[in-house]
Length: 96
Image 1 (cartoon, rainbow, N blue to C red):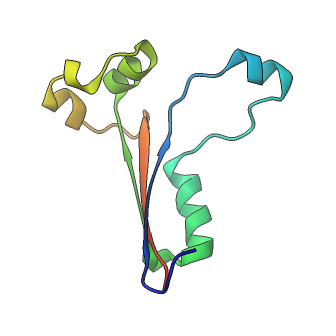
Image 2 (cartoon, rainbow, N blue to C red):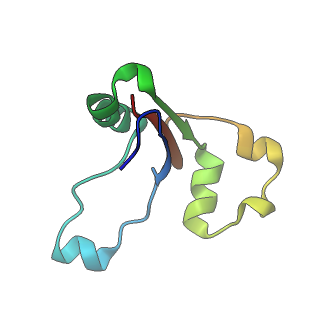
Image 3 (spheres, rainbow, N blue to C red):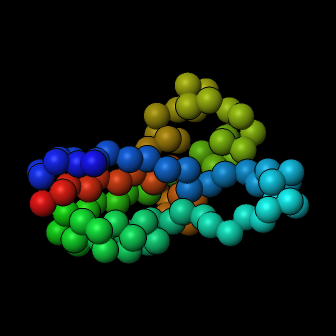
């Protein structure tokens, strides 16, 4: 539980490979997007108390799926942002 004026810093995977084992047995019903997270956190913390930022691009998405580490990419390859490829989504939420 957050105390009043406490800050939650959270990251979630936006792009993940499907586990066929789990998919075939139980299904895969939920994916995170910046829009969905913003809506969910706004309901709990209030719109003025939530910041959501997606990070990623097509190259970092491919790197994630192929197991290529961030150290193997150039800084400019990592810093380019393309909201169509949300590899990691960061959330800052403040309890008021």
